[in-house]
Image 1: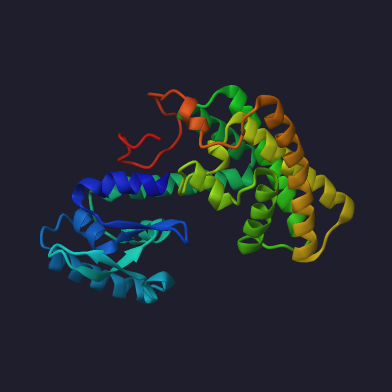
Image 2: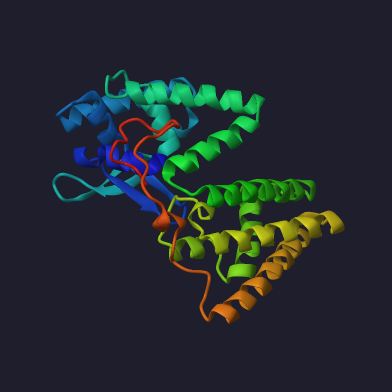
Length: 292
C-alpha cells in the first residue's frame, strides 16, 4: 500500500521510480522527492540539498545512505543518468529529516503508526481487530474476512513450527512457502502473483475464496505433519512443506475435475468488492485518490 501511495502522491510532480522485479520493490529518485518536498524549482539546488542531507544522515549513523543505491533513470535532457534511489522504507526515513510543510502530514502518520504498533505489541488482539477494520474498509465481505483471519492464524502456527525446526525468517521462510505453494497450485509465489498481475500486493489478500481455502489447507496440513515428525534442517522441513501442499493439491484436482475448470486463476478477491467511502483505519496521508 505504501509503495502505491507514494507513486500516486508524487506522479504529478514527475518523481521517477522503477520496479525491481528481482527484489520485488519500487525504487524512487531521492532528488526528485526532495525537490517536491522542499518546493525547490531548481533541480541542481535540490541535488545539492540532498548531498548535504545525505552527509548529515551518514554522520547520524543511517547506514543505508552510506552506500546509497544508484540506478540509471532518464534525465530532463533525455539521457540515462545514474541517480540516488531509495526503497519505501529508506524514503520514509529520509523524509523524516526534511523540514517541510508537505512532509509534516507524513511524519504525523508515522508517529501514529508507531504508537499503534507499540500498543499492538503489548496486546496482540489489537492487531487482529485492526486487520478486520482494514479489510472491511477495503470492502471485503465478513465471510471472506473470517476466512482470511483464520488463514493468518494457521500461517502463524506453521511459521512457529518452522522456527522450532531451526528455520529463519527471510530466505528460508520464502523458500519453504514457494515449495508449499507450488506443490498445491503448480506455481511458485512469484509465478502466482504474476498470474494475478500483482507486485507488492499480498497474494493471500488477492486469492479467491477457493484459493484461500486450499492454501489454508496446505499450510494446516504441513503444520500437523511438522508437529508429528519434528523435522530439523531445511531439507526435512522442505519435505514436510511439499507433502502438506500435496494434500491441498489432491483436493484442488478433485474440485477441478468436478467443475471442469481450473480454480487457480487470474481473478482476485478485490475484483468482487465494492469501494468504501469512509475509512476507519489509518492510511498514508495524501491518499484521497489512492484507494485500492
